Image (cartoon, rainbow, N blue to C red; front, side):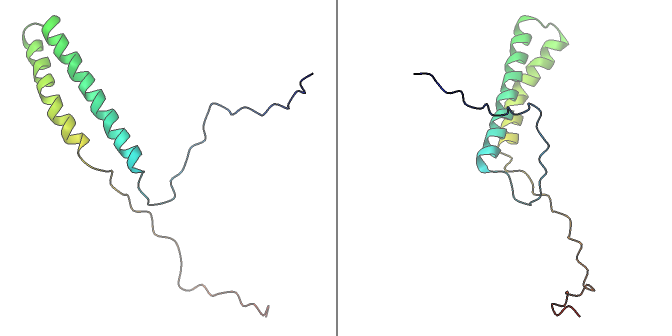
Length: 108
């Protein structure tokens, strides 16, 4: 049996259009937790690199700077990760003037 070719769907373009926020609603909890987790893991990766460099490569004052960073980063990471959700930015007031009158339905 011969297969009938299906019309191909147009492919999406890789470039995305910007998405504009038109509401005062916060991001979802899952997005917020994912973002904080990502920031924490990046900070812990930087801490690991600082610790390895302090042990292997650095000597003198640079070693102490890297050790200081490796000691301070866990505290800072936890504080920022537990900082809570993002702040809600108020939307601008709408431009509604009180002097506007409703349109009369009678047409007069």
